[in-house]
Image (cartoon, rainbow, N blue to C red; front, side, top):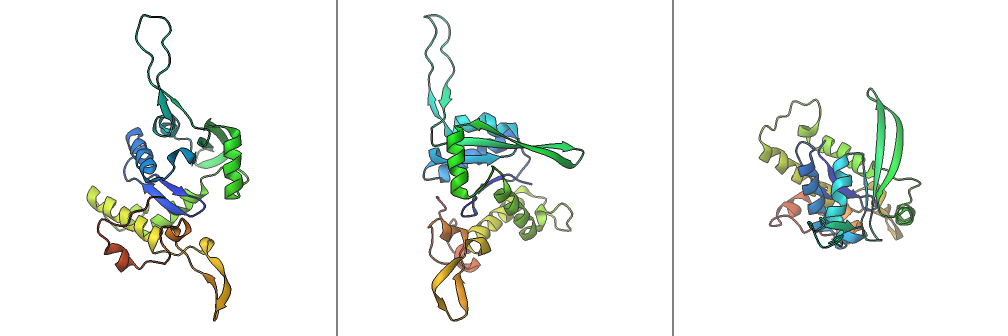
Length: 226
């Protein structure tokens, strides 16, 4: 399944990538996620145990500095990275016995326990998890048959797979209402008790549910800077 980053509170899919899961793909995912965030240094990232996240998070979301050289000879130390107090990275590591998950442990790879606890309180979570992006992956498989493990659909060309993935991402963010995002109306409109909302409405990018025609008519898509 292609990796992606999403906002748990709004269910907004910030960035997704298509291809084999490698360090290069992970770097592209994190860099483009940073470019789309209004405050990239306020991010608390929950990931699985893939090691490239731990390696690349400080480089992408940290602040670079040059450590002092010891003495007057030799090379200068390599650039290091400080993690802002407002950022953190938590790994959710699953241990398997065959194909079964036998245990799950969490590890704070960067940042402080206090910052992680603050984010858990804001999200209403009791413990760190990756349920938001896992739910989105399941939805993507239902919306895009080329991502299903057993399917009669074929997408041999990379351009086709990427185009379909972008279409699913845009539809999910801008055209698909989410039951978990609906808000109760102060004054019911007939039998309507709730305002149906999309992910883009939850983070203030729009005030209405878009039709697929309206979204596709926008040149180069719609800005989704969160």
